[in-house]
Amino acid sequence: MPQSGTELDRYKPVLAQAMRGIVPDDVLQRHSKGEYSTDFHASLRHNRAALVDLFDDSLLARAGLIGDAAVHAPLLGVHPTPEGLRSLSSTLGSEIRLRAHPAQARPPSSTTTEEAP
Image (cartoon, rainbow, N blue to C red; front, side):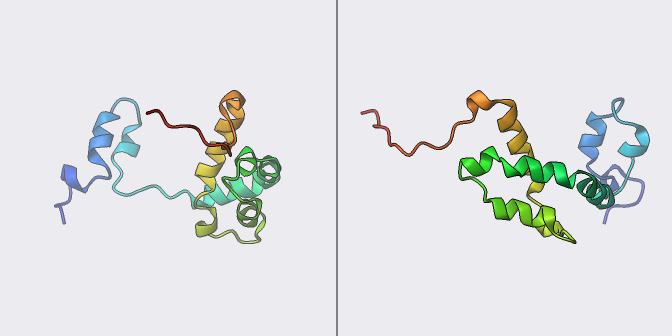
């Protein structure tokens, strides 16, 4: 284990050095990863209805990339587990991106194309 007070005992020292002057020093000097599960669960409770509405008409589901039940189960569960919610962030990000760029959102084609010789 690195000696206390050295650059090696800081959390992500290279990133911290690159962000110096941009991020507050007390954040850059931390020695562990931040823990935000309380904020996450409070936000989930506050925004649950909006998330369910968003995924009720999901572009990802229409394209066959996600299943409605797989998304709704963790959102509607009484006590969502971290495992059930782990992929929610990336799924939500993908859904929002598809909705922001609808012209680029195309369902998978069921036709095959000829390969070039």
